Length: 391
Image (cartoon, rainbow, N blue to C red; front, side, top):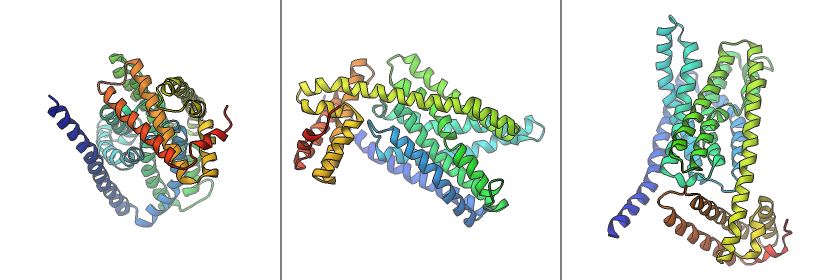
C-alpha cells in the first residue's frame, strides 16, 4: 500500500525537476527564433537599440512586482520561467495567431485586417497566451498561490516579459524609420509613450486574469474557481482591446480620455487592491504566529518581529550590522519559512489547501525547523533580535 504513493511522489519529483529544464530549453529556442526574425526584418543594430531602450521600463516594472511580493517571495526559478514564457513563448504563439486574426479581419473588413487584428484579435490572443502560464502554474503548483497578490505577481511578471519583447520590436522599428529622434518623433518619443506613460500597460491587462486566479485560490467554491479566472481574462482582454482601439482607431483625444478616465483609475484601483491584500497577508501571518510559538516551532520573543515587514527588516539590518551578511541571509530564510507555514495553516483552516495539505505541512514544518537551525548556527543571529525595537 505504501509503494505506490512513494513511487508517485518520486515521479512527481522527477517531473518537478525535468519540466522547468525542458521549458527553459523550449523557450530558449523560441527566443532564438524571435531574434532571427527580428534581425532578418529590421537588422541587428536596431534590435540592439530596441533591447537597450526596453530595459529601462521592464526593470522598473519587475522591481515593482518584486517589491509587492515581499511577504512570501515567489521562487526565483518560477518567476524566471514566467518572464521567459512571456518574452518568448507567449510572444511567438501570439505572433502566429495574430497573423490568422489579420487574415480573418481582411475577409470580414474587405481587405482591412489590421484594425480587426489590433482591436479584436490581438487582445483575445495575447491575453490568452500570457494567462496560459499562470493558469498552468495554478493547476500544477497550486500551493504557490496564497491569494490575489500572488496571482498579480505571476501575471505581471509574465506580462512584463511579453512587453519587453514587444518594446524591443517597436523601438527597433521606429529607430529604422526615424532614428533616436526627439520629444516628438523617433525612439525618444516612443520611449516617453511606452516607457514613461504606460510601462504597466501589459502587466495591468494581465493582472486582471491574475486577480481572478488569486480569488480562485482563496475559495473552496468550485463555481468561483471557474468563474473568477474567466471574468479576469475577459477583463484583461477588454482593457487590452480598449487600449488598442485608442492607439490605432481613435484620435489623440480618444487616447487621452481613455488614459485618464479608464486606465489611470483601473491602475489606481489595482494598486489599492494590492495594498489591501498585503494587509490581509500581514493579518494572516500575525494570526498564525502565536499558535506556532505555542507549539514551540518559533520563539515567543520573535512573534512581534515576524508579524510585520518593518520588524523583519529591522531584524535583518541589526543582524547584518552586528554579525554579517551570512547571518542576515539565514534570518531572511527563517522569516520566509515562517510565512509559508503560516499561509498554509490558514488555507488548511479555510479548507482550500488541497488534498496534499498534510504532506505539505510536514515539508514546510521541516523547512522551518531547518531554517531556524541555520539561523541559530549563525552566531548571534537570533540573539540580535533582542536588541531590535519592536512595534
